[in-house]
Length: 311
Image: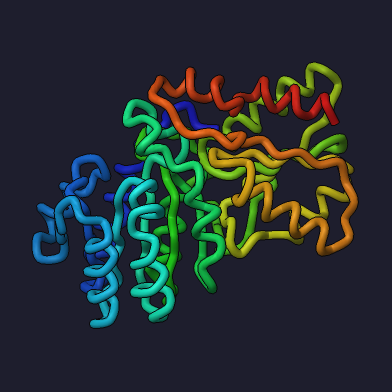
């Protein structure tokens, strides 16, 4: 893990600028959040390819869909609560049903919304997005994987929902690491339990939990899911069989997202294990610091250890 965290929004902007320099079809669409998303430098460098639709998230998706229909590759970003709950029907119909090429970016997922509070705290976006046919859902865990998946999304035709925090995150991977949609990464081997984590926040907590468990004599494997849809069931299933116990970890409601996807895969493939889901337990969000919110919604490494011990 790197000792120098980098702002994820800075990586987002830098990668899009790098792509735009060689591909004239790369376009950024914003809902009056360019400062929050970090794309002001993109707007200055490519003023004719940066569109601010104002505080109108459904229109954000509609404009992105229209641009896609003309051959552009739009990256449309807003807070994840608005990308999912507010603009869901537009993204479902105008982008996905129409089989276009919209890359929808939801920032500040789950408790990462911190002081914006419960109204802006998306604990349900993954559950919504999972049921859109043929949609790719990715949540990079660090600056290296974020850069890679932005490039992968731009290179492949089809709609993508990319979930990411805006603030600094440590790097778990070397700069030359390769990634693929639908492929998870094994960050640590273990024999007693496998921690299956999604996103920067929970992958970091999974690694901390593995260290805490090691002190207690428990050997924990750690998987960074990266792509929720399509899920890398083969890797998860392999380590579920080896360990016999699985704990999923997500910055999202415990139902409908990663935990549900993994449970479905294990049951449908006859993999019998002891299983638990770490996530928000049917609650709305709150205002608070990240530390407070993680403790409030039981998303800490200490909570992971408690769950593992219960198995």
